[in-house]
Image (tube, rainbow, N blue to C red):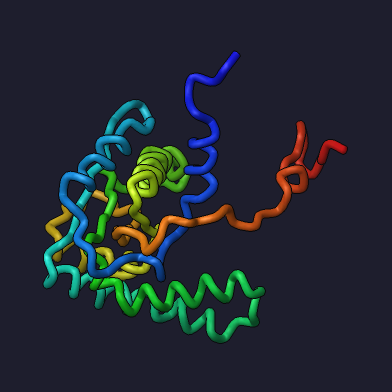
Length: 214
């Protein structure tokens, strides 16, 4: 039986949607309707108890982007210092750190900064999986929708070191949780490739931890 969905196109989308930082086009505007189309797709994602508590804050105002950039750089400074002091974990990880530093420098120049939020706050760690499981699938769907339209993003969170200041800047209520900050722009080129990953046979266990099928 043939698949009802083009698996080749789907697999390409899933394996080449990367965290994009250095290849964000900082000069090309992102139309409002493109962002809304991607959110329309994102909110088809499942949520716990079908509460549909997602909320999306899109920041395009230059002054607010500049202030968010300040908060983002301040929040990321400690992380970058720790990365510089740590021993190199390989060429791939060094490239990731280099691109993260680059994004810190230009974050305020990215055409759109999208902050996905969810209504409510975590008061008990036992509820964390279900709580964030109600927003993370929608965020990933949003990123996939961006990729299919020639845009890119990266899941970032440095601004959360200053969550209250961010909330005050954007008028986010205190009973709403910010899940991430996504810099969104068209990508410079679209030729993204699958990343190098460990074979799934090495990281997949059957029936008990550590049991690998031979």
